[in-house]
Length: 411
Image (tube, rainbow, N blue to C red; front, side, top):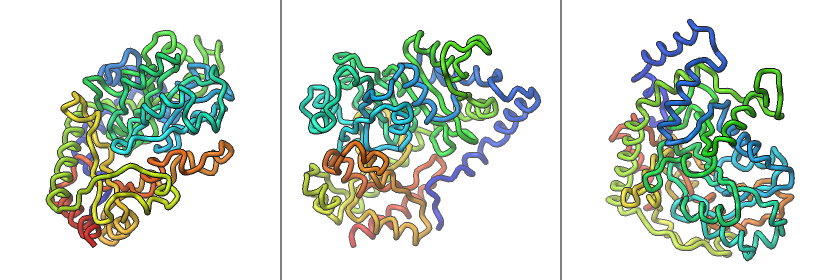
């Protein structure tokens, strides 16, 4: 039984007629740039995300870049962020000349730890002493809602208010996720979304969106994505060319109608995985990461080698009035590499997100980070592996994956 990590063909087969009709309408109109479908999708998805304002753009990476451009981030300004995420988060900071400040994650959620943020802003964090930043140059926080579960927003928003920091939600993996009844992208100053084809709401190519809370910043971002021109050929700002293609907007409007049902199915699959792994007797508990754990590449971690850690719903639990939409189902194991090899042998899809924490990437070596500066992230990078989850995944496929993983873990 060959089981893919993600099978977009199954999704397409269920909606192909609607998709083709929507694309044909764009082809008939011949308005491929900023057509009516773009405005309609912005309106629909903005309402879905509970956003004040929303603007399509070319990609999730551009969404982050546009948010930082809108707040006039200057070279040498500092932005606090997570080391355990896709490169685009920190890449957007660096592209403007900003300095990414990598602070550690929570062990249970993989998301930025608010206590780390407070410790840094109070000037007592070891990374603060390493970077020795000018206080007035600390401008923003980019937090990531990783794998489909939102970061702990309230304490982060409180810190941001106290220190006058802009909050950017990197919600590339979390459209429709909820925190205490509020949707991803509706709480911070900006919400940045990716519609890369593999996302829960995926386009047929690159596409992105920015949600904005403040009207003045929204107006500015709208201009920035169009070369900084308003009206055309009159440039009040130096912007970029980052527009959402009309065809992509048409495709996304069709898919948006199904998103909640797809998200609910992802939750069902995740909970089924949880039950089956529990029944297999392979679920353990994760202790605290220590300096020795970091130095040994995770080999000294307190996790039992014959156990795995299954995803924990923190902010995304129903008890907290939240929703985890499971963009990925990610487990942790000291036998991660063995699990990956065995899954490959059984032609079962899997992926390691992310094998090298951002604070350890070569391009950021100039900042002087060491693995132990973010020990939880470092340890997670050695243990985390994502296994198949998509709405069309069959129960027998889930059982097969659990059986293969459990066999490796038990040794």
